[in-house]
Image (cartoon, rainbow, N blue to C red; front, side, top):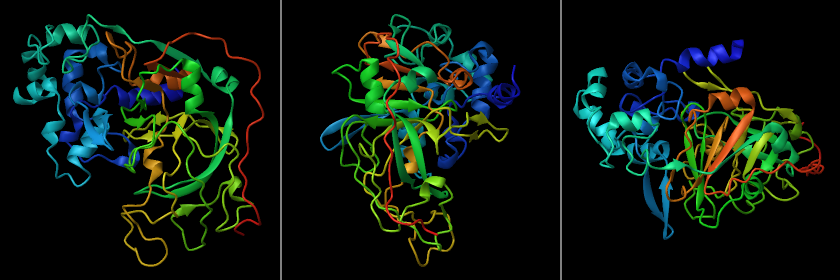
Length: 404
């Protein structure tokens, strides 16, 4: 085992979070909500499930749906917790639990509770919790049972991704709580990747997963909600915002050279939702789950989401000094929070009838090690050979002298 893999495995074996939002406030910038005692209780009863599909927040936390612009939008377990619980911790957190999570809580929320509810059928689908767990099915989700088959899937290697048309874009990553940055990312437009995977007409959106359990939903088509970033289409052109006073924004990227403050950022082909393979021309560093249970690194693949409503890089919300240039504005577009790091899996929603989540390690750490990504769900799943050499990447440009 490599040193990097060993480093990832040590904290991971303490458990991927199961009901963890009952324990602590979500740390959005870290993406990571795992490592608490509930997951340990589950893995004590089912140690062979460590690192697999059920070793995930979704074991006890369920998703939900909202009406957005007349469209019903499904949210994954992570986003649903954020929506219902909120960053102010005032929401009804218990309402984010699925049937299995509620049973676990009601039976004492300890290792004994896992055993006590093993023979129960929490989600009422006709299978005991124990049988569903053995079959790698979520015991709190009635739509996920042993009768269903795995959804169509395609596994892409880095070589296959690089054989698809490449796109490069320079943009602002505006974070709500952390340092903002301008950087250039290159990779495959997500719309292009989904087309290659054979996306079905029934598809409505995608959920992307990071190996630490973070998931994020994106509708295919634009919605008015500023928190919903669409997969399809071109995002609005932005301008380059620079000030030496903006110490909370990182302008050190070499791609900032030549960008004139206030000038439009020209991106051939437009700003797109991008599965990035490179930053500033260099491969993204693979993620490592550090000893503090936080995801360090952003590669080998990162979903890059442009701003729907371009804005300057405002100050981080925890920053004490909010006087002067670009104070924090909650209503501004903080796209960095939706630019999921270290994406290992993309689920095209909704899953076809009669299918369920793929029966592999949902946390996805092996895909970090192998430099691969899985696309599954509402796709044809046809295996096709990557075609030819990729075209020369499009290049963004900023006219005029650099910020100096």
